[in-house]
Length: 147
Image (cartoon, rainbow, N blue to C red; front, side):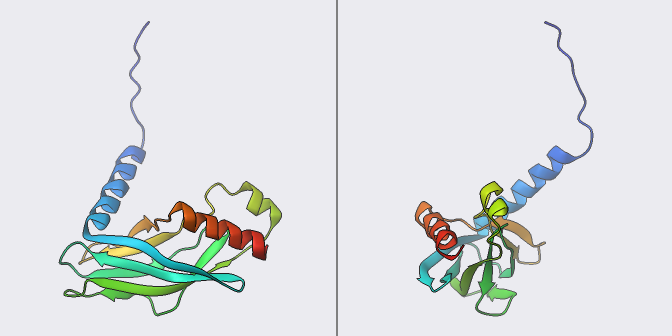
């Protein structure tokens, strides 16, 4: 069998590597979680919690939506976990942005919510909000109940 070397065109692998390194650096500086999901009518409510792992100031710049759900902050953004503070809690409400049957049936990542997080003077980095299996089940139940 003959080996063939094919040069990689473009910078895709380098870009993916840089994004993964940036995400790892953010997660080394701050723990991110969701706490207290509870049904509230046609929504879920809870808190996005940032817990300090380093001494730098942390900014939660934005909450981005998934294909079918959005996180509505209960306070102003950006929110800051200042030096000397251990934890930042941002109340959020989760609500459907569409009940279109085609979208609901075809979406592959309905519960991926990128957060834009900045550590110190660095660039804001998109980090997916970590959700437990139970929290994903609550989101699925919300879609089933509302849609």
